[in-house]
Length: 402
Ligand code: PLP
Image 1 (cartoon, rainbow, N blue to C red):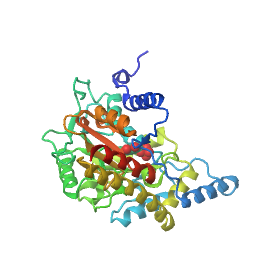
Image 2 (spheres, helix red, strand yellow):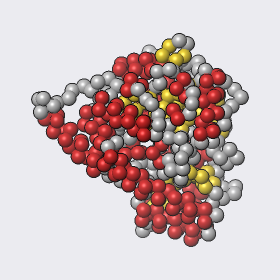
Image 3 (cartoon, rainbow, N blue to C red):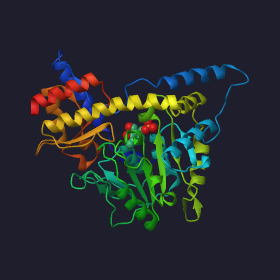
Image 4 (cartoon, rainbow, N blue to C red):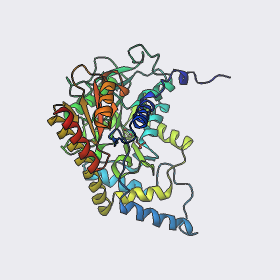
């Protein structure tokens, strides 16, 4: 028996376990403490009414012999593909129905996409980073060994720092696969048209494929590109991942999609054909009820409801950023994103700020070092809480630091 030894190399995900442990210990020692959780990465508002109504109707469809739906077609049901195509058209992007692959999540898709690429490809990831990109490459044997500094020997790191405004810069080295995430988790920063154009030029020059995670595109408010396909040349070098999770509150319902342009080929082989084969073999589609719900979020009525919720989270994120800045913190994100990324006071490590905020303000956030070595000294707060609790958290931070 041989196991996939790469799994033994995976680092334990201490981040959220460690956070939970410290919060429990604090609560046990201070039972009266009124703790505010701003570390949350999940949505909290209910689904848009249009989605709820559509899913109720879809359940009724399942009760009728004439309207019952069994296995959904391989890459998604046509009504949802049409709605996604129209959604892209609204921002001026032409996507063919055959290029859309509907799935149960951007986590699965960004995690599974590695299946269609060989084990010897050079992979570039940002630091700090959404950990799925790294761990799935560790599993596939593409990451090498972990070094003392927390970096994997075979990965190429695109270090995102205050100096580059947390935008990954095109490297001198060659990479075959490049994971980009914009607006970014954890930094909350969206990449500009110029920055994305640099990456598209790099990928076309190097023969690389950009794996572009746009799970937070709906949070963009400043005109930054909402799709990599708005950048000329992207159709020959990019795959885009999108999700209904953070956009429409589908984190628990599960629906997402990946777009692989027809022009994307490597070694004379069409990449979409490989992804289609991978999905049709290992995945049996998203339930009809879910796809009906997702479709409803893209109707006129659904869009208005979705926007109300996005506005709610955005207002929280803006309030956090403004409040922290007035208390003397340097912040990023919070404009095109539910995430606010802040610099800990000079010389303070991420976990020290975690302990300080928990002990002195009864606020829970996420230490930046949990997203990679370059996140050390930074901290993430999110706009996914309630408006009232967010405002109270800001008051407490201002009282402590201002
Ligand atoms: N991509 C990024 C960058 C995320 O932060 C998340 C969730 O937090 C996901 C993907 C997961 O999306 P989904 O719920 O569609 O799997």
